Amino acid sequence: MTDTTTTDGRLTGSGLRVGYGERTVIADLDVVVPDGSFTVIVGPNACGKSTLLRTLSRLLKPEHGTILLDGRAVNDYGGKEFAREVGLLPQQSIAPEGITIIDLVSRGRFPYQTMFRQWTDADQHAVDFALQVTRLTDLSTRRVEALSGGQRQRVWIAMALAQETPILLLDEPTTYLDLGHQIEVLELCTELNRRGTTLVAVLHDLNQAARYASHIIAMRAGEILAVGPPGEIITAELVDQVFGVYSQVIDDPQTGTPLVVPLAQGAVRVEET
Image (tube, rainbow, N blue to C red; front, side, top):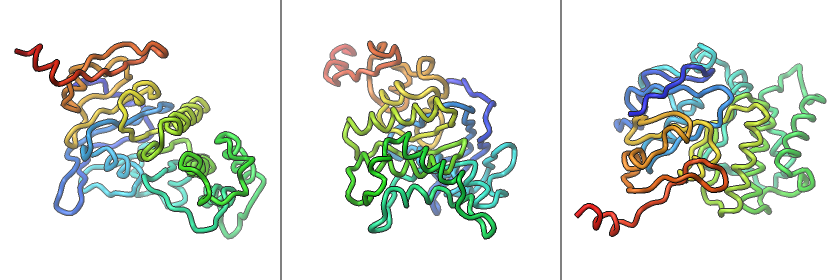
């Protein structure tokens, strides 16, 4: 295990054991989300990536251990109070039939609404800004159901952005998108991070994670095997440990970040005989 753990983070978990019914997915896990980072969780299917993210978001309650936000247990926060600090883009989101982009994005302001505080100029500004950053302003009156997959994903990100949370969690935001829309979403995430949002995303593509993330959490079988900047932890040895794939890791010619090149299994067998 590569021990590059940082303790500088508002959102942390310690001694986590999480599962579904009698099946334990995560056991005795510690995690820290570095402030200001674009953290990406990677690992093979069913390794606990989304389970960890859902636990950080309060969607799952750990059987043991604690999730803290600013040193306070997340379950001690009221629903709207927590939603003003941590936003979540779930893996699968379904929009109400017939709803327009602007109406859906406006729902991101729900945590700020009370009986005594209705829609304000601050709410409108947040929605306008979210639409602008996600390049949806000119489409704002369209129905969400009429959009392409990439556009719909931008709408959900805009709604999360309208919450104005300092921390944003994204569960597989590029799943089911073609390559162009994947890059579009990741570029948007990078821009949000540049603007000061701490992001945590689950991704399947290790090379995309290496290119866009500032911090990687590599998992296998419910454990964290390595954490740290991509350039420090992504090695051929780690790829083998996490994914069971022989590879060569080179510098990406465009970005200088690690680029994982899987080796043909036949070629590996020849080298090993």
